[in-house]
Image: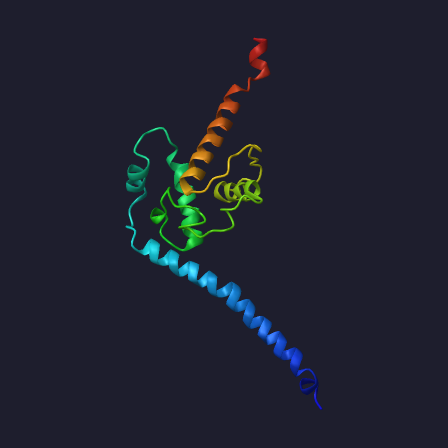
Length: 163
């Protein structure tokens, strides 16, 4: 008798478990990707200026900051960044389960910001509210960076106080 003959039951079990893992994890991921592809294929491709005019017509928001979020998500999803709308939710339209969950949310958002801005020292406050959509992330980032800018402007140079 060979090793295979003696262990055919275990080999069959290992193959069945492998097939089960593929069915349970790979097929739903393929289905999510296909739904995303169908949803985003019908959306128009536009310039970023047109995207800003459509979704953020009022002045007072940081265009460069607003550009980076859809670019990062578009790159991850493999679609044109201007096909990502501010109303897209992470758990519904984007099907990005890694960001649309409250567990470890703050750490994941900090990692996203660090990736977007190539900075390793960004630390968000503990009271950052949970966001569900792309627009909420953009608003949260703009609020955070506005606060950081204001704090930097409040810092007084000690040499200026002496004179």
